[in-house]
Amino acid sequence: MRAGTGLLIALVAWAVAGCADRPTADWSRQLKTDEDYFPIGVWMQETSKAERFREMGVNLYVNLWQGPTNAQLAELADAGMEAFCEMAHDGRANLDNPVIVGWLHTDEPDNAQPANLPGRYDPPITPAQIAHRYRRIKETDPSRPVMVTLGRGVAWDQWHGRGERVNCPQDYPAYLEGCDMASFALYPIVSREAPIAGKLWLVGEGVTRLKTWSGGRRMVWAAVECSRITNMDIEPTAAEIRAEVWMAIIHGARGILYFAHQFTPAYNASPILDADHQALYEGVKQLNWEIHALASAINAPEAGTPATVASSVESIPIAATTRRVEDATYLFAVAMRDGLTRATFTVPDVRDGAAVEILGEGRSLTVENGRFADDFTGFQVHLYRISD
Image (cartoon, rainbow, N blue to C red; front, side, top):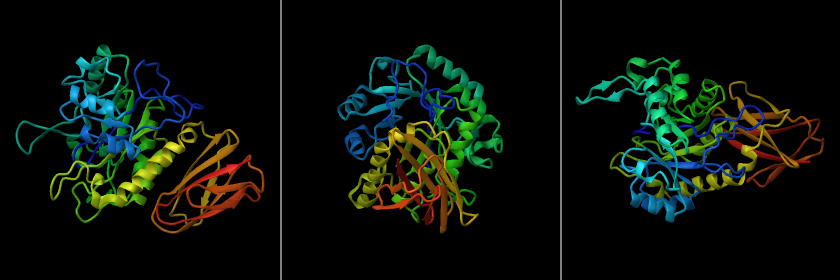
């Protein structure tokens, strides 16, 4: 995740259909695989701030500046925080440290790479080079997964930052052969680039592409902006961040990575922790704990007969996924465009008269003739629980 982009890579080999994309590889050291665990990471933050991020619902540090060092790992251990990091620096010296639960490739290998001459760039790191590095990491430590963090090209074929590999989406299936997990980042809320600016739905589309390119064999994550980055005209709102996060989850992401850095007018690694961003901090904190509370449903297999949804405004599609947990059906839905629409959900295998609780909103609906309907504003998320 460089300035303005950041990606994350996938952890464990994805389970095939029926296992809700839960990791299946048998590593002795890795992220938790409990059904009520969902990884929420933050990119390259100071370890002295780990306790604050833990309170915000973050449970993973991804990448450690010039690390891992013994001091960084000690601070993370004190905060109950785990980490993905590069094997460079002191990584090999810390193979037995339980704080490290995964290894990283070089960030955004799919982008053109800085050359020795100022302002010049070399071609992207090739998939073959990534596969070679992957084998070297696994030879040193087969007990942990390896993550690759990819760039905007995952969801934007014309991203010029790929240099000579612009409009070459065929590269990505090969990149995914060199990892156990994959993530990507583009930041549409704060982007100034017209092809992606304001197009929050690209986060969900990127997740779908990674899942498709990996044949469902890699766990996919998504990176989400929670700062201005370099755009002083726009700051993400908690509602926009929530929309991107749930778009990613509904499309199959099983991890979220926040990019919190701001580079202008002055560098600040984590403005979201500052007092003058308290409202944003509280909003993202509420979102994170919402995800943790629903983790067992997110991780559950999709319902055998999933709900279907029709939008009253064709240009505002609703993305949804259905989960069955014990005696309840969970339906997570998000409007994929800005605007007003009414969504009608058809929910098979649910009795008429069943109560539909809209989680966190203090209201409810009722299933009638196998259906219920609800209104959506721009990019709005609704989370439903239907009791038997």
